[in-house]
Length: 114
Image (cartoon, rainbow, N blue to C red; front, side):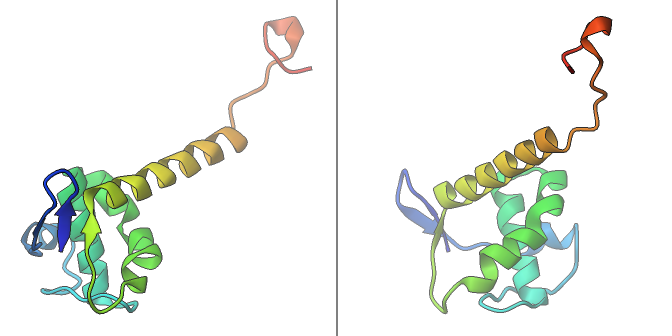
């Protein structure tokens, strides 16, 4: 169940939209590393973001870090999903900065490299 923290109302999620992108399984499951967990991860991210590319990029990682670890009965909030996505974005930005392949020009040529 996905819960809106503003209204504190929950709603069920169907695999319909996520099946249009990837067909791992026609239903959901969690708490293990399987096809139904993969479909759930994709459905949650797609439902939350409505961004196909972002959902496809991160759903396997979301399954590994969140869905595989869920207990039998669970609820996840929009805030928790957004927080996970923000953390992944920050990690990606850090990596991009650390491993930038942009040329470092010498100061004599107007760059910042020493």
